[in-house]
Length: 331
Image (cartoon, rainbow, N blue to C red; front, side):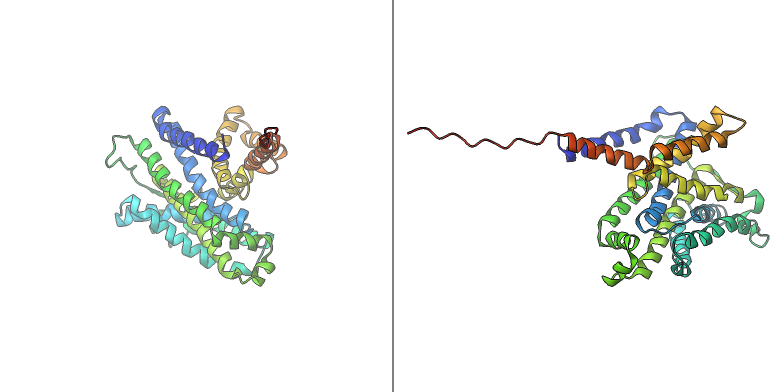
């Protein structure tokens, strides 16, 4: 079986599993699977920025919060349908991320991480500010009803699962094609050597700010989806630990890996719950041990392990023997 056939079979099996999950899981586990999809979208955006463009961000929880509050405000204050708020939240975060990336052009590495960290720390406080609390709900936040399935005979959790899946798959396809195109090669070239990329005619300033904006757009869409799923937003729902969890997710899943973003989403959704079940007294100690073990055993993330395993299987595969020339008849 060729490598393309193996990939096709793997994608087909994955599609069957994704379509069957909400029909075999309970409502709570379907909710968890939906949150994995939401986190996978946010991690893909962060991986575009850190893994492929080399810009470090510790503040994507802020863009996640902006997207969530945009949906909540438009649904409750304006009366807009929830599905219509998703592209609006993404567009708003795209603009905010692009504008935030402009002054950040002067910063690189850890010096860029500090302003993004400050953004994540300040966002919950800004949402609590008394002058905007009539719009954001202040400490109490905003609540709204869970949507029903408009056409299909599905319950609310099953419908939201397929709704989020129907948004996440096109976003992953767009991200995959973006990185394979000329734009993606320019983004990676800036990460590898910015000066050499500029010498080749790549506009470093534009691509860096555009990547920051696109990354924030992915986080904003994920935040909007999370608001629809949980039917509640509050400043305490977006602590600094959320931004750090996104960073943990892309490192565990694999930096500069699109499938690794989905694996990292599984980690940040389920490992804290498993840690709480193992120890009620010290769940974060268990979480830390698991994280240290994962980094010790998989320094390149899950994607790196799979990549190295694939290379080993390729090298162990016996080479095809050359066909022998037919013997000539004597005479």
